[in-house]
Image 1 (cartoon, protein in one colour):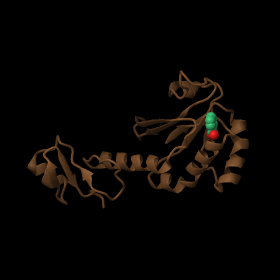
Image 2: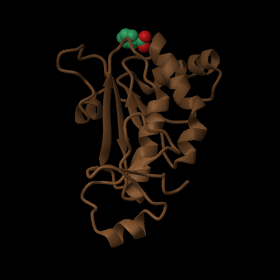
Image 3: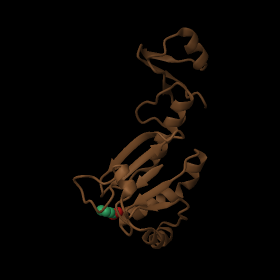
Image 4: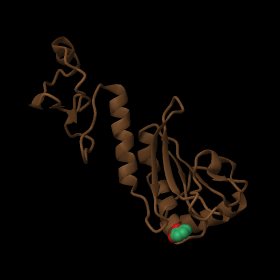
Length: 180
Ligand code: BEZ
């Protein structure tokens, strides 16, 4: 999970980087590494880290990239063409083990991100990668999932969805989460 914040020593960012640290166990449990970035220097990150730990009661155990020359920020499109070019916007990238970007999100400067949502998408991606399923609106770990419409072969349906499935419409079929 690679995310950028606009600036060190700012309030919303302080809460977000604190939350990322507090959810360290949730990321580790899913085999996910956390990496933060802004265009502030590594020296600045080091000083700010003490404030994050003090105010958010956490230990920041993940690296924060000091991207002063904006090299990485530009590669990832983290600097919005219509916003200040001296700051990265609040972006989130979920990158899979094959180094493929699977999720991008961009938030407004005034809105802190929702880490439950980031973890929820990671759960959904890991489930979809392991089993042939998709996840419905507001899905949470443990809830029923969707069988992709392309899967129609009765033998395959029987083999891959042993818990059975409900047909709501021919294109909308649900099955209990396979790994629960
Ligand atoms: C903040 O983290 O509070 C913030 C940072 C940059 C612009 C606006 C808000």
